[in-house]
Length: 163
Image (tube, rainbow, N blue to C red; front, side, top):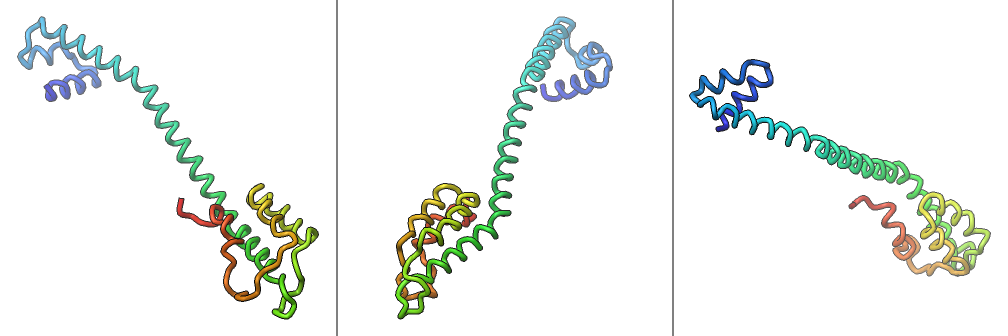
């Protein structure tokens, strides 16, 4: 049957006489009409399913393109976001006790607000609120060279590339 289908489509596409092909393969004239009806049905089914298939591929392509553009944006902003985190961490670690080398007792509004505004545009409202939560607080100076994990925790979704 597959051999017949290949012959039929080959002759149908190239415009040769399908009737003579079927009759030469040993089929009766009554089978010719039945085969032609089956082929017409097959062609109509394939032509009807073409539009939804193209639409599905278009949707998949659009989804992949959207994911790629989000990833590209995240990649392009990485340097600016990482620099912002390090600059704020440097400011944060400059607070505390003067006997341990700090330059200020705690972070004040006028020191934090420029960072919060920049954070709002680079990251969003969640990081800006996190930065503002440091107002009036100071860093524990026991290990100043160790990164502050509580400070960096909300930045994880913006600076890590696992997903």
